[in-house]
Amino acid sequence: MDQMNYTAPQPQPTQPAYAQGCLGAAWADIKATPGYVGKLVVLGLIMCVPILNFVVLGYLLHWAREVPFGGRTPLPVQRVTGKNFEFGFYAFVIALAVSIVMGVVGMILGVIPILGWLVYMALSLAAMAVIALMQMRMIMGYSIGDGFNVKDLWKVAQRNIGQLLLVTLVPGLVVSFVVGIVGGVIMFVAMLLGLGGALPSIVSSSSVGTASMTDALAIMSFILGPALLAGLVVYVLAMIAETVANTLTLRGLGHWVARYAPEWTALAPVVPPTRPVQPTTPTYPQDPGAPLQ
Figure 1 (cartoon, helix red, strand yellow):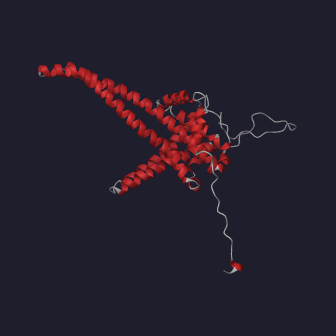
Figure 2: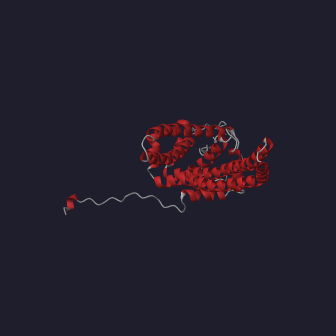
Figure 3: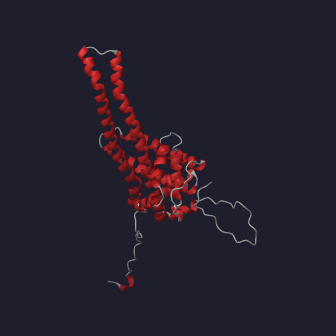
């Protein structure tokens, strides 16, 4: 070997080891909140109200935003604020824009049997991760435009795409699976109870030979009543479960950004001091991770 031309191999950069994964750290943050179960339930009930549910997304994004700045506070007490609604709406716009693009892609791939459908399913899962990362970048800079910087999003996502997919996909998929099973069981039981209540009317009508309008309405009310009530219960449970999943995902994404995209803290807008500072008084930097009021 030519010693003069020999170049020693350079050490490759390695990812630092963390005591917890992003989801584990997010769950620890949630459990550190006193009365976290009740707070998540309240957020889930707010999620049940259309339009007002933007508040929940903005609330969770603001809580996740503090992590890259070093914040580790419990779930905030104040939920319904103008800023939470505003940035929750921005997050909705981002999700809507990506959904429209995916709709166009779906129409194109839909003409390709099997393979096109499989590709679309994979792209749909990737879109879920993209939406969450776009929303996180948006809240870091407090600007909807920051969420659409595709070049930077792609560069950052490659730093640990496995953790990113784990954080953004697993909570939602697990919750959807559980809610699907529990909801199906509740609806099945409700239908059985409805049929049981309607059985006397059905037997009575069959013995006569013809069912009157009153009998038909009674049978429908016995069947539909429990079904509608069960549907409402399943909907509320689904919103609470979705809130838990969103809380895990966004808080976990905050930890992901802190570890793999710490430069996003530079997106924070510079907030001017609220009171004049005397020349002889030492100045202290404001916390850029604090939510806007």
